[in-house]
Image (cartoon, rainbow, N blue to C red; front, top):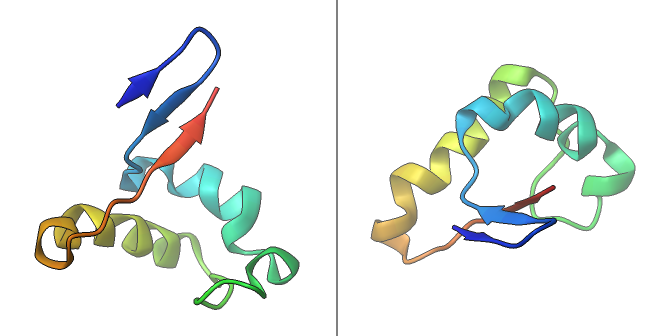
Length: 68
């Protein structure tokens, strides 16, 4: 986690699902250039946000979220 006066860079968690789903994960215009399709449900976003946590070490991936 990295924080400044105005911003926080942190790993996403399943508790962020509502914000992520509403902000971009369910929007076809936003996701059309991503490697995954728009999410159709909040549970799909929860599952998506659980993946980085579970697989980061195995696949050597890093996922972060920028919040204010």
